[in-house]
Length: 473
Image 1: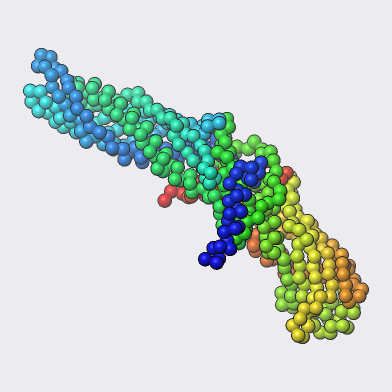
Image 2: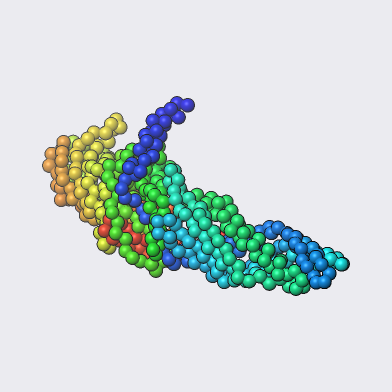
């Protein structure tokens, strides 16, 4: 209970800060774009699902009267109809600007079987085949978003039209059966689609993550900032795209930039990931102290001639070795501020500012501060992404060192720069790159994998393109 009570203020703060559109900021941190090629793929996968649903439709039977001259009226019963094969041949999924999507299915056919009975002078019964040709289905799908940031979908309208029904039966009453069967099937097709959208498609869209775990400490806020936006040629989804501390939320002090996305359509889907995403990560890890580091002698590669000892430091600070003979040193580093990623066409870079404090480890295990350095460097970065995640790596630049304080007299700063370059390269960067190689996940629906990825660096954002495969289970 004590732990819960301690977490409640942070949770309430997060709810207050994130429950209104104004708190979300003006611009998305991440935009997903589904192109016409992607919509075409979605339509083709949808046909497979609808064909399976059509085979499960339960059709009602019906009765009727017929007349045979000069014998008078008779009755018939059409019962136990069942669809045993169908083929949906052509489909198109197109954007409805300001609303959502329009699904059109055409050039399709169904074959059904049924039992029948007729009675006039004698009883007749048997089975019959029904061929349904020229089926056209039109459905409008309205896209929205819940207050929780999850997407919604509903079928606002549905119409189906059957061009031709052929019943292989005596001409006595087959015209009546064809007419009634057409009306029943047209109604059942739309009923099935409405039900499938509500019970299958809507729950599937809910698998789009609202928050995704990066590690035990941080997560990504992937709430939708608005309903998916349909334009003439594509569908765009706006995500918050903020990385946050999972245990203690604090508001971000900067906004996502405006992104001018290129008109690319060679892939099914594109993701524009702004520097906001990466820089919120930097801020979160910095505020929590995760970017602080310590370098000790046992971290220096084995066999290196340079050690973190007062003896090895004699060329840099002669007095240090005299005051503290044969003792180990420890370097403690911290970022002066969260290092922000700068994105420009074809280039990713950071310019971290660090402060490094040197300590002598006394025999009593006390750490004695002896010097303080200001360190600046330029770092280039690379990004890659696979079937679901963005990963990165840093390539170090040369450090520049400023001696801010010395308690042991003169320092040879030029030599010290070379030492720090070596120590940071051999101890710090491998750990950072190991963490960056874990990456963070993109907002993907369940069972979706990406392939044939492409990556471009633009001003303020990374532009990722890929084709999509739905992994049926």
